[in-house]
Image (cartoon, rainbow, N blue to C red; front, top):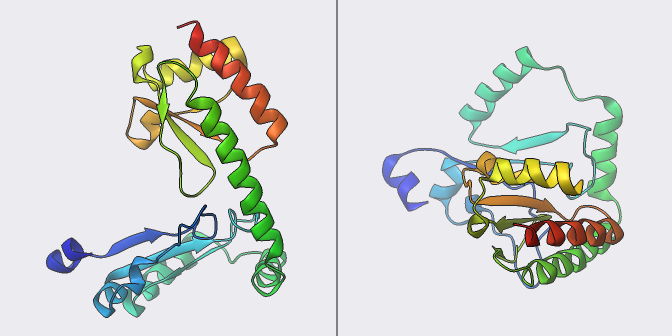
Length: 199
C-alpha cells in the first residue's frame, strides 16, 4: 500500500478466496486499511470458489467511481450481462445459510492437512502449508526436472495431473489441488509418491 500511495498507482486485489482461509487466519482486504488504500484499490471477487459456482462466470468489483465506469464501458461492449439464473443463485448464496460454506471450508482444511502431511514425507520435495484456497505449491527443484517436464512425465507414467509452476512464474514448483474427494487425493498422492521415488 505504501508503494502504491507513493507512486499513485492502483492496486488490483483479487479476493476470490477470502472465505476459504484456515486455522485462525483472518482475511483482511487491503482496501480496508485506510482511506488512501480504499481510494487506490480495485477489488475483484466472485462466487465460483466460496460458493462452488464454477462455470457460472459471475463476479464483481468494487473500485473508485471513475475506474468502475471505465470498466463498465469496456465490459458492456465485450460481454453480455450475466444470465438470470446465475444472478439469482448469487443472491441466494449471499442471503442463504452460510453453514454449508463453513462445512466446505472445514472439509478443505482436512484435505489440506492430509495432503500437506503426505507431501512432507516424500524425499526431495518440500511445500509450504497454505493458509487459504485449495492448492499446495510443491517445490520439486531437487528432482532435477522443469515443472513442465515433471508434469508431463507424471501424467504419462502415473496418470496424475498437476499444474506446472512455470504458469505461476516459478519453474521449480508444481501445483496440486485438494478440491476433490479424499479418496482421489489418497490415490493421487500414492501415485505421486511412487513417481517421485523413481527420479
